[in-house]
Length: 212
Image 1 (spheres, rainbow, N blue to C red):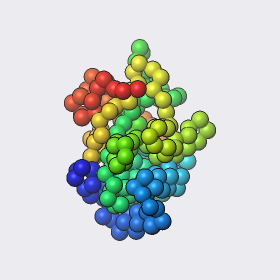
Image 2: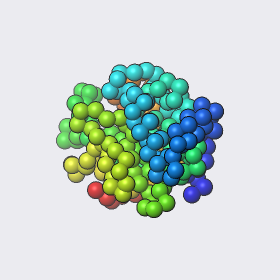
Image 3: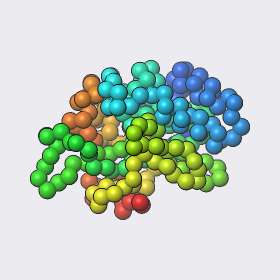
Image 4: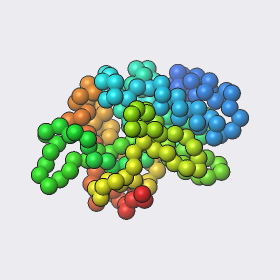
C-alpha cells in the first residue's frame, strides 16, 4: 500500500493546509470509515465543480484545488486522495469512460459518439478492501454517497462505448494532467476533454474489459 500513501507533485498531501484540514476532518472520527466519509463529503460539498459553477482557474494539484476551492472531477479526486493519505488511509485514482452530454461541435465525429474520462477515487477500507467514491459534487440527477459496502457513484454505465475501469492508480493518468495543466479557463477543458479508447486501457493500467 506504500504507493497509495505517498506525497507527490500532484497529490501533495504534505502541504500544510492539506495536513491541517485532514487532521481537522478526522479529529472527531473514531474509525477509518468515519474519517474517509468526512473527507469525501467535504470535497464533494465544499469544492465547487468547475463546469457546474463555471469557475476558474483550472486546477490540478491537490493544494491548488484547496486554495481556489474549485476543480473538475479529476482535480477533486486529487484533493480527496491527498486528504485521505494525510490521514494515513491508502487512496488511489480510478476512472470511468462516459459519453459527453451536448458535446461541442468540434467533438462531433461521424459514426463516433464523443467520450470523456471521468475521475473517481478508490479508498482502501479495512473491512471491505478497495471502495470507489465519486467526489465530483451532487446536482440535479447526481447523488453520489458514501455507503459502504454499496457503491453509489454519480454516473452509471449505460452504453457500449462507456466503461467502469477496474484499475486503481497511485498517480493521475498523463492524458488527464496534460489537459488540466494546459487549460487556463474552464471552457477550454470542454474543448479538449481527456479520453482513451477501450482498446488502449490495458496499456494505461486501467484494465479492460471493465466491470459494470
